[in-house]
Image (spheres, rainbow, N blue to C red):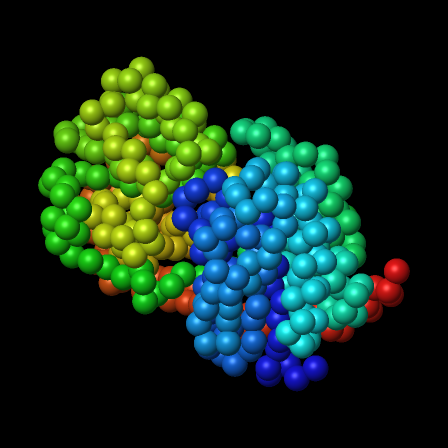
Length: 410
């Protein structure tokens, strides 16, 4: 295998990397796959990302950039379905992927699967092709169940994750914390796990002058807090809403919530009712889904971006906000202690209690203008997370996978 020019089959069975960001199954993992594939292609590798066709209007092949493309495969009806329901269509997905490969005369050096459903597919392709299989889970079912917030991960997921850890040649994680969880909960050998953080597109996410951003969005001059992400109980939006009444010193404070789709309608309604109970309904805007190219305006318009999650595998939203020059207050989840410079580019608070979140937010909002780091200095603090750097780290890990013994053909 020429390590300088890898042919990579990347798997994202349940989630389309070009889907609507902030929807039920389109979040940080989708951004990661799309951006990584694009950057790997720029660096000379050939990347095919395989995903399930979820809409009859999907083109089978979508260009993701130089030497990188997305390939939609039929697996069940071409419609949005719950990700657990995708499991029953994985054999069809796997066979259609193999047929596409054969019909187009393709050969791959390595399989890189994302999430547990793709790990199941990768296991069989690994045996058929006799090439290494690298897995990245992005979130772990056993950890989500231990937290006990939101929908429980199924036993099927737990078992499949454990099998994927055992069967693959290497596991990539974004944080030291996730590596420890893999070892503790799934018995993963430490030397089988490589750590590569997530990245941020520094070309898309750039600072915009705050007043110009607000004028473009039709926002007023008061203090603005921002939440970006899926509307899911695990994201802790309710904790953030409960923090707002504790910020009475900041007159005219507003909260903008970006994310949510038809599948999160019940959770959005629950949160709306909570704003009424807290008497803050006039200060909270549920913005819904927006296009990625609009996000820099919202980040730049905000005084503080807040990540109140109970669990994050990394913390991509914080990177995006900092790249736009906006400080972040976050719960101690993912890799946020390494991303945020405490007291300089934001605050990481212990837990996501409303009081702790409010305290962190108040510290930022109370800083005199001269004490607030400039947008460019905040942005400079995360230069190491450029996708060029992250892609190089991923390639190093993918290359290491070839050093492990291959699983024999069943």
